[in-house]
Image (cartoon, rainbow, N blue to C red; front, side):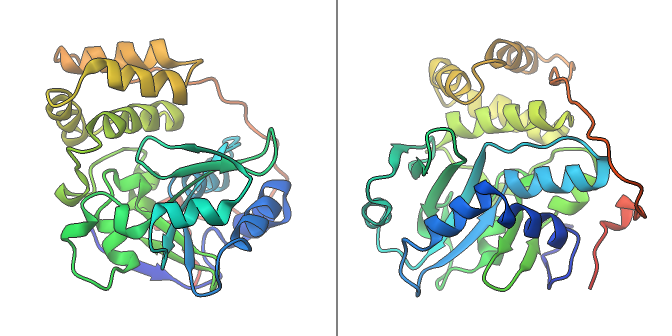
Length: 271
C-alpha cells in the first residue's frame, strides 16, 4: 500500500534543488513566482523532481525542459493567465497555462489545484496529500514546496528506486483528459527508460477505447516530435497485446567527481 510521507530539508533533493534555483531556469522560476500574490501558494511537482532524482542516484544527465507548478489560492485559470501578463503563453494538454519567460528558456506548466484530475470530488480544503493521491502515475506523485523546502511523496521515490512506472490509484484516472494521460504514460516510459507496470499498460488499453487515436498522436507529436513515431509504435504494441518495452533515448552520462553514494533502495532520505 502506498504511503504518504513528507520530508523536511535537508532531504534527498535539497542540494539538487538549490543548484537548480541558482541556474538561469531557477531564476526564471523565481521571477515567475513574483508575478503572483503573496497569499497564493505555488508547489512544484512531477518531471523536474523526477529528473533531479535520476541525476543524483544514477548520474543520468537530466535537462528538464519544463516545470509543473500547481497553484493554491487562484480563483480561476484566467486569473493565473492575467498575472502572467505578456509572457509567451499557450494552453497545455490538461487545460492549464503554459508559458516561458525567454525565447529558449524553461517552459512552465501551471494549473490550479482545483483543476487537477478529479479534484472536484475531493473534500475541501484541498491539500498536497490529496493532490498526490489524484496523480495518475506513481513516479509523478512527488511535490516540492519551495517556500519551506519540504518534499512530499506518495510512492514516487519508491517507484524511482525500483525503476518501474505504476499507477498511483484510481483517483488519478480522468476520462476528461484520457488522450493526454495516455500520451503522458507513454512519454514517461520513454523519458525514464522505465517499463510500465501491468496496471499502467491496462490503463493505456482501457483509456484508448475512450478517445480518438488522432488526439493521442497529436499530443505526442507536439510533446515529443523527435520520438513520436517510436512512442506510437510502442503504444500500438500495447494495444495489440504485445510485451515490448518503450524504446529509450540515448543518454549521456555526466562525469561526476567522486562522492559518497547512498543506497538508492533507502531512497537517500536525510532528515
